[in-house]
Length: 461
Image 1 (cartoon, one colour):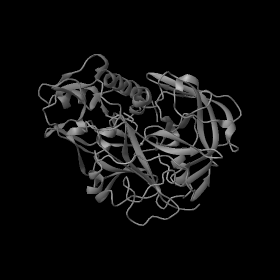
Image 2 (cartoon, rainbow, N blue to C red):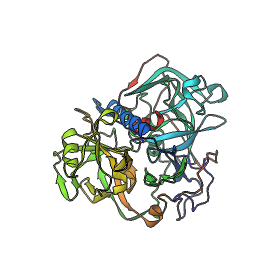
Image 3 (cartoon, one colour):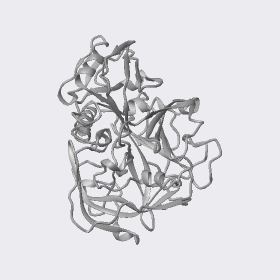
Image 4 (tube, rainbow, N blue to C red):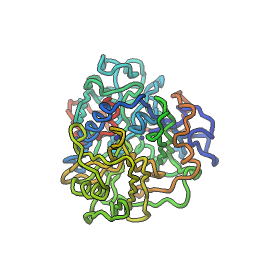
């Protein structure tokens, strides 16, 4: 779902916490820890609503789409709603104000709730433009459409900080109208980590400004996510992993990183899906099939015919109904083994991640669901159900996605609990100025009918 962002110095944590690097890292940057939020106890009705929201918003997000000083940093992540989404923190304005935002490699816009959002934004912290001396209103309408909601506001620019990095005149949107329950505290918005070409605002994403201006030691960012979906004692907030900016943390993975180049002009982080095996049986994959790697999606979406073929390998599985439409149920007692390949190494999905939710004492809902995205969009959307099983790297040049096996350090964090990172404003060690987006003075309505949803799934609860 959407369920990944990254505010390095925003989290003052010891270097051995939440996957912080054990190797030497320049003092000019840190990582950002990710967090997650869990409601307890788990409610089947809420899970059904979340599942429907994920599917609706995924289709809205993807269907019909076309698609100075160098340093490193890391940011702790929060795991929210039993692995349904992951968020981190960033800071906006002068003086800097910190906000929690969903980390989403499946979209490209940064937006946060504004101070005039009203009751629809609930208790989520909001951004007050008048409190920032460096804020600039671009007087351009901003409109994001989800399958089950919307957010409206206007484009702006200001200083944005994350993980010890700062971008002046960074483009983002201030949202003052949202659907009821779109935001769930403490989350205030979303940070898009895909490419500028699919940005609703047309403005360059935060990560791309840093990478293109040589702010990082290596022009890439990497994500490690934790698993709590099978932990019945999980708390509302749990350590969610880490986002590394400008480097890869060798303590979090073993072996080499298997990179797969993005075909054509970068838009989503999409790569070829070449093989899929369920219970040892190969599922037919059409030649040229592409898959978007999306931290903002909780589960894994694919063509209806392929999803049917997957569950045909699982005895006593059957299509789910109602809000679960598009999903399948299967006996919880069945251990389901799935392997994926993107043209290089083969990667396994833990059976614990295949079981998305339990609807009765014996029946579970699988993480793979049907969503036909249509022409011009990736056929498969690979979300956190897969990404929890690998160390994922998103490289700027050449544009590519890489995966590596998790180390024992990473695996030990699954279900381990611990202190949840808290957002604080740290020292900026590397700064760049966004010169790619000239301020615009005319009104322009932009609709993002391609924003995805596992992110929205959790925000909509």
